[in-house]
Image (cartoon, rainbow, N blue to C red; front, top):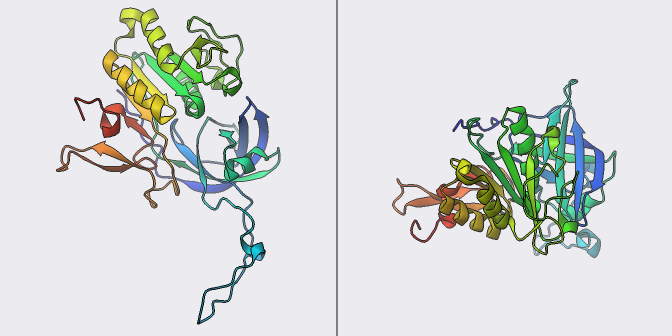
Length: 328
C-alpha cells in the first residue's frame, strides 16, 4: 500500500464566504465556501466550524466579582443559547482554482443549536473555518480494488475521496452508500439506482468521477433494500474471485462501522474506518474523543488514542473496540 502522508501540520483559522447553499434532502444541506487559500488536505480529514457570529470587542461584557460572593448574572446575560465550541465536519469536497482560491464543501444536518445556525446561512454569509485536522485515508497502489462505504452522515468524506482517487488514476473503485430512506440520502442522483444492487454510475460525484455506486435504503424506498452491509455482500457476489485484495474504506455511524468491520474481516478484506467521536477542540487538547488502540508494547496490549489527531481514520485492526471476540 502506498501510504498517503498526512497533509502536514499546517492548519489555519480563516474566514470563508458562503458561495452556494443547497438543501440536498430532507435533513441535509450542502454548504460551499470560498477562501483565498487553504493548507493541503486529504480525504478523511475534517474541519472545525465556528457555528455562530464571531464576537467583536464591543460584545465583551465585564462583570464585577465581589469579595464576599460570586458575580451576579442577569437573565439577559445567559438567556441566549450559543454554541461556544466549534463543530467538526468532514470535508465533503475541496478544489483549488487557477487563481489560488480554495473551495471547501461540508454537508450539514440540523440536529442542535450549532447545526441549526449553519442551516440558516445564505450565500454571501461568512463562516470561520479551522483545519485541516486529523489523519485521512491512505491511498493504496493502483492495482487494488477499492470499495468506499458510507452511511448517513458518513457519506461526505467519501465524496471527496472519489474526486481524489479519480484524479490519481484509480479506476477499480465502487461506492456503497446507504440511508434510512430516499428523502435522507445526501447525494445527487443522475439516474435511479438499481433495486437489485447492481453497481451503476447513478450518483453525481465530485470531479466528474464516473464510479459505479450501489445505493441501499433501510425501508426499500430507493435502491437495494437493506443496509450497506447488504450492498457489500451483493458487490462481493457480483465480483467473485476478482474481489480478492480489496481495500474497504468506510465512514458512518458506530453500529454500521462495527458491522462493516466484522464483514470485511470475514471476507479477508483490508479495511480503514473513519470513526465518529465527539470532538471538543479537534487538536488533541480536550481528550473528549478517546478510542482504544492496539499497542503490543503496552502492558495492557492497548493504549488510549485520540480520534481527532491519531485519526479519525484508522486501520480496522488497530482499534480494539472493532475487533472480533477471538482477537479481543
